[in-house]
Length: 430
Image (tube, rainbow, N blue to C red; front, top):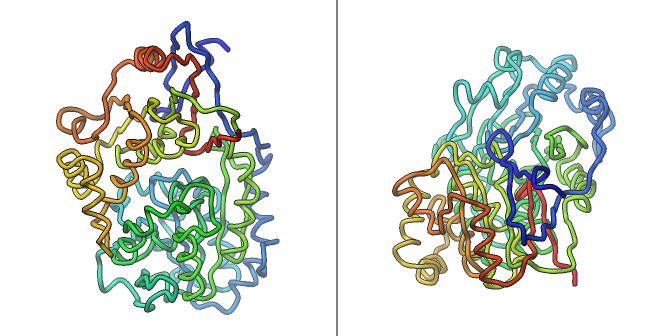
C-alpha cells in the first residue's frame, strides 16, 4: 500500500495521509456492494413491489392527504432521486398535490432553510409544487400528544403535520448509529419529528448508559424498542429506506411497512458494514465521514465512538473532521464547557439523576466513552480559539506526527485507518 493511496473522508473531499516509515497500516473499509445500475428503475421497483405492504399506487388511493418525512442536512440521503416519483405516484392515484407535504425531520437540530433546503431536497420541482416544512421540536402547538409508552413511560408527542396526514411515509438512510443501532426507518419519526420532551427522554442517561444502546445492535436496545412502540402507537406508517456506498451511490432501496422495510435494509447492509478484526490497535485513525456529517464538532463525536471496539485501553484515537460550520448549538457548547470544568466523572454524575436530558448534552455524554478508554486527538481546520478548548480533547495540526507519537508511546507500529469513519463498524473478533 503506497502512502498516496491512503486518504480519509474530510469535508467535501478527502484528506491524504502520510504515514511514518515505521507504521504498519491496516485499512478498514466496508465490503464493496454492487452499485444499482439504474437508481430510478430501482426506486420504481421498490415502490411497486414493497415489503409487507401494497404498492404505493394502491396505498395512495382514496387518501385525502400525505406527508413525507426526509432527514435533515446531516444525512446524505438521495432525496433528489425519490421525492418526485413518490409525489407523482400519489397525485396519479388521486391525492391533490396541494395536500402533499414534505417535512424535514430535524429532531432538535436547527432548521434547514434557503439554499441549504434546496440542496437537501435536491429537486426544484418538489420545492415549487409541494409544501416543504421544517420540524420545530420546541413548538408546543405543532405536536399531538399520544400519551406515554408502556415499557419505559416515555412521553410521546409528534409533529401534527405528520400525525394528521392520511398517508404517512418516512424516508432515510440506513447506516450504523452509535446509540439507536441503525439510522433510518422508525428513527426518522422519533426523534426526527418528536417534541423536545420525547427527544430529551430518549437522550437521558438511563438510555445512553445502557450497554445495549450501541451501533449495529437492535436486540434489547432500549432506544430501538421505544421507537418501535412509538410507531405502533402512531398506527399505519410506511418507509422508503436507502443504503449508499462510500461514493454515496445507491446500492439498495426498500419501501413498505416501516418496521419490515427498515429491517430489510438493515439485513442487506449489516454484514458489509461490520468488519471483523483479529486484533486491537494502540493507534486508530478515523474520520467523521466527511460532508455533511463533519460540518460541526457536535456530529464529530459519532466518529469517536464507532471504532472503540478495536482501540486498546490507553491507546490513541486520532480523528479528522473539517467542522466547516463550527462547533454546534449553544446548548452543546454549554455542555462541553461543563465537561471541561468538571471533568468526565463529575460531569457524568450530574446526568444520572435526570429524567430529561438538557438539549444536546447527550452528545457530550457520548464523548465520555472514548475518553474513558484512551486518548482522543482531533485534526480540524474549522475550529479556532475557545472552540478548540471546549472540545475537551487534544488538538493536533499534523496527523503524521500524531501517529508517530502514538507509535513511540505504545511501542506498537500497527495503525488502523478507517477512511469512512462512523459509516464503518470495526469489530474485535479474537
